[in-house]
Image 1 (cartoon, rainbow, N blue to C red):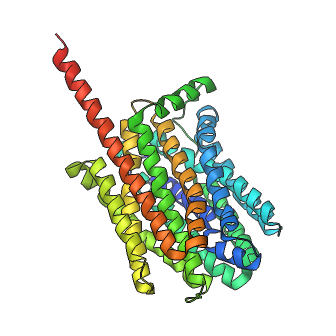
Image 2 (image 1 turned 120 degrees about the horizontal axis):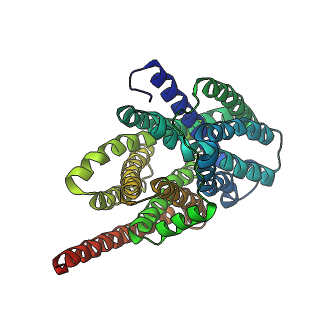
Image 3 (image 1 turned 45 degrees about the vertical axis):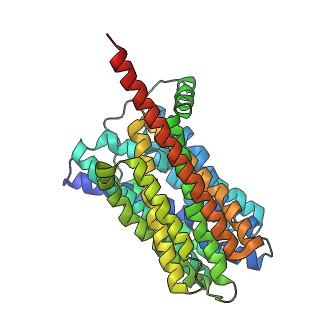
Length: 405
C-alpha cells in the first residue's frame, strides 16, 4: 500500500488534490458571473441562476451512477474519464452564445464532475495505508475548498478582463493542462477488486438509507444548510453590483474568500464532537450562521463581509458534522450513504438559489434575510427531529436490553 512520506504518496496525493482543485474550479466558475449575464442578456436573476443550478444538479444526480460504475471498472478510469470531459465541455461553452445551450452544457459539466467527486476517496481508501489515508483525505478536502474559492475569484476577475467567453476559454485551457498532469501522476490501482453486485442490490441499499430516519434527516440538514449558505453568496453578488455599491465583478468575487472561515471551523468540528456531540454542534453551527445573516443587514461593506465570514463559519461547521454523522451512522454501504448525502447537499444548493434570488427580486435584501432565517428555522427543526429520533432509538435499545432474560 502507499505509505505516508514515500515519493509515491506525495505524487499520488498531489494528483488527487489537484484533480479535486480542477473539479471545484469548474463547478463554481460561473457563480460570480450571474450578475453579468442578468445585466448583459436582459434576463432575470432567477433565470441566470440556472447557470449554477444546472451544474450542481447535474453533479448531484451523477454521483451514485458514477460510484456504481467504478465498482465494476475501477476508480482510476472513472476519475480520468470525468476529468478529460471537462475541457471538452468548456470549449463547447466558449463557442456558443445561446443562454439555454450554455445551461445545457453546464448540466453536462456537472455530470462530468461527478465521476471524480464520487470515487476519489474510495480510491484513497483502497490504495493508501490507514495513516496515509487520514492525511491524504485532509489534503483532498482542503483542495475542494481552495478550488471552489479559486474558481469563483478567477471567474470574476477574468470576466472583467476578457468577458465570460474569455474566462471560460482560459479555464478550459488551464483544466486541459491540469488533466494531463493528473493523468501522468495518478498511478494505476493495485488493490481494487471489481464488484459484480447487481444494480438492483445497489438500489436496495439506497432505499435502505432513505428509510433510516437518523440518516435521511441528516441528509436533509446538509441540503437545507447548503441552500442557505452558497446562495446567500450568490445574492450578495447581485447586491454589490447594484446601486448604491455598483462594484465591479472582479472585486465582488473577492467576497468568496470568506469561505476560508469555513475551512477553519471544519477542522474544529472534530474536537467539538468528542466533547459535546454532533447534534448539538449542528444546532450551534446553524445559530451561528443565522447570526451572520442578521449582521448582513448592515449597509456597510465591512460589516457585510463580517456577516459572510460568520455565515461561512457556522454553515461549514454544520456541514462537516452532518457529513461525518452520515458516514458514521451508516451500518453498511457507507460509500452509498455519503454519496446520497452529497446528492441532498447539491440538490439543496441548486433549489435554494431560486428561493433566495426570488426573495431578492421581490423584497430586496431585507426579504433575503427573512428567507434565509426561515431556512435556519427549518434547519433547527430538522436538528430537533434528529435528536428525537436518536433519543427514541436509544430508549428502545435500553428497553430491549432490560427486557432480555
